[in-house]
Structures are given as structure tokens and as C-alpha cells.
Image (cartoon, rainbow, N blue to C red):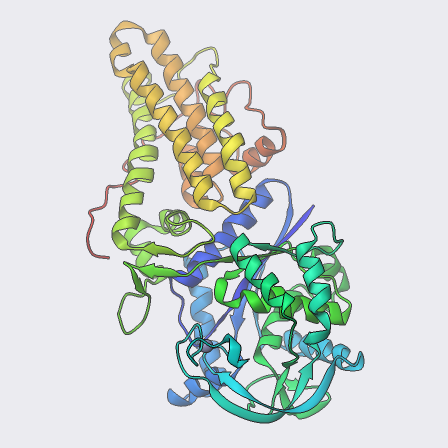
Length: 515
Ligand SMILES: [Zn+2]
């Protein structure tokens, strides 16, 4: 079983912020989750480096476009290293193999008669790098940038997008279609279907006035439209057309992840290009909403942009990953604030998870010389935890409802903590050592099960705590085995007699206020 997941390639006129981090962390968690479930995963991310906006930004900074894209692309790589992102390839649209592969697909479309030349005059938004028909503007302004598009006229190569309306409509609306494209969430899917019903207009696939881009192979005076160049990364990143074996192994993509503003390109233009070239279409296109920060749009001028470094400085890498993708629902728009992130950190991690670990280990330290007590294995609490996670966590993960998966984890943690309150093990030290042994053993096994499920969210910390709780074997290998057969080892994950470690303060409480 293979699983191919992509993030958008990020446009390098911006430096990495929480918006990019959100999509990339979500993709990384999904990639890790699928690997733990036995899939052969390929995870692609990268940077989109061509276009008029980049050329203009470079000029403003007194740099060549190449210098600018090299610098910014490196910043994205750094950010993903910081956030422990496990991509298989970081593609840059200035990579030589991408350039020749993009020319290859344009050539195929041209040879199939799907690309033709015409003079065009229309309204162009430089922010979006696209033409807008008048009807798609809101009060004459770009719906995303709220700026007035400029009238541009030039002779371009056009793609016969209009001839794909019916085919795309069928593929998107008919789940039984052998090349069904699933679009999520539902609301966005309906918007796309609505537009398809109105019919599609042919789109310009080249520009004449821009030289920072990929030359059109059959007319070097023209440059490939930056969106065509960008979308093609999803196949060039896995070897199209030269490495046929790699390409055939992973294509079609299982999920393209993105924010809602670029859903149109991914669910209409991209599948049409592929259909035209005789290449299978992606299986699922999934868009998430926009963020506001404290109710306001994130912007440099408001100074409320949240960088990956700031998140890591405040919460640490693993907690930053967990918080970024679980604070708001994946799909609709949502509001983020430092206080909301801090509250979630204190409730989910410092209280629920941190307290559980420190309680179990303190009891073992005080009464059993920091060893897992010797008892007949009692797995009832772990089985109960497993039930919650199997029913609610796993399906949420598979559907990319990461906030729901986190809710299931927290529900399981709450149940374990309730059990501890009920057992009142601190009283048992004087009255019933046998029962205390059994309690501590139970808490440890349930905690280990939580760690296995947290692993995709918090890879380094889950592994660290796995050692602290005396669990045996490598956590990833144990998790893979567990997800394959959903069976808790007979002697538990942390067997009797195993050495525990003093946890120290894993999740120090953080004060509200400020960054
Ligand atoms: Zn725009």
C-alpha cells in the first residue's frame, strides 16, 4: 500500500509563518501516521519560485531573482528542519528536472491540440498571478486581495479548459467514477461543482512579458504561466517523466493539501491538465480555511505574524506541532491567539498528559525503587484506553480531522486520570502494596498506548517519554506492530521489573500573555 501526500509549494515572496507551518505539520503528521500503519509513504513539499511577483520583489531588494529564491527557499528548509518535518523531497521549481518535465507536459498538451495561440485582454491580479473574469470580482476587486486587477492585453498560448467542464463535473460528483476526485470540505466542493455547471473558459497558459520562468518549449519568447509550472511539481517531484518506476509507484496523489484560496487550481485546472496529457488525476484534494490572529487578518503591517521559531521558543518543537494543528478544526476558518495556544498547552499537555506521567512515576519512585512493579499483568485500563482510541482517534486521523483525533486522545487521558482519582493510589502505599503495584502497572501501560498514538504529532517527545516509562523496544516498531494487530503485548508495553526514569518537568506550565 502506498500513500502520496503533498503540501502546496510555497511562494517565495513570503517567509515561513504559521499558515505554511499549519499545512506542512498536518501533512507531516499524516505521513507519519500512514507510515506507522504500514503504508509506503512519499511526502512532497517545496517552493514555488517563478513569476512576476518574485521578479519584482527581487528588483526591489536589489537582488537577482535567483539570489532571492535561493535565500527564501533556504528559510523554508530551515523552518521545516526546526519543526521536524519528515519530507521525502523538497522540490524547487527552479530545479533542472522540474523545468524539463514542465516543458515536457506543455509539449504533450500542445501536440494534442489542447494549446492554441490567441490575443487576450482581461483583468489580471498580480497578487494571485491570474486573470479574473468580471463576474468573479467583488465590487470590481480581487476576492482575495481586495485590490483592483489591471487590464492586460497580450498574445498568449491558451489551454482548452472549456472542453473539460463535463468530464470534471462527472469525476467530482460521481463517487463511482473510476477516476473520482474527492474534494473536501463539502462546502468548498459544492462551490466548485456550482462553477463547473456554468461551464469553464479557456485559460492562458503562457505569458509574454515575463522572463523569470520556464520558457515555452515551442516558442521561447513565451514563459509558462507560473501556476502551470507550480502545479506540475506534484508529478515532477516523484520523477515524471524520467523515473517511470518511482512515478508509477506513487502517482496518483492520495491527498493534495492546501488552503482554500488555491483550491480552484487544484481541483479544476490541475485535473484538466492531467486529463489532457493522459495522466491519472489525484484522488483527493483537501483544503483548509484561513486563520485570523486574535480576530484580525495576519499581516506584516499589523505585526501579528507568528513564525515557526516563535512557536518553538515558547512551547518546544513537539508541543508547537501538536498545538498548531489541533487548536482549530481542519477545514473551516479559525482564530488563533497566543493565549488560546497557551491554554491548550496547559490543559492538554501540562495537566492531562504531564500530570499522568508524573503521578505514575512518582508513585513508582517512592514505593518501588523506580521500577515497574512485579505483578500479574493487568491490562484492563489499557484495553479501555485502546477502545476509545480505536473508535475515535484512528478514524479521525484517516479523515484528517486532526483536532478530533486530539480530542479523542484527551478523552482517553481524562479517563485514565479519573481512574487514578478513583483508585487514590497515594493511600494504598500504607494499606495495600499489592493493589498499588497493580495500579502503577496499569497506569504505565495506558500511558504507553497514549504515546504510540501521539507519536505522529510529537515524534521526539513521545520517544523520550517511552524510555522514561520503561517501555521496551523501539517506539516506532512497537507502534507499527500494534496498529497492524491492535493487540497489547501480554506483559504490557512496560513489563514488570523494567527500569523507569525520573521524568523531571516534561511540560512546565506556561503563563498567559505575550508571545
Ligand atoms: Zn488576488
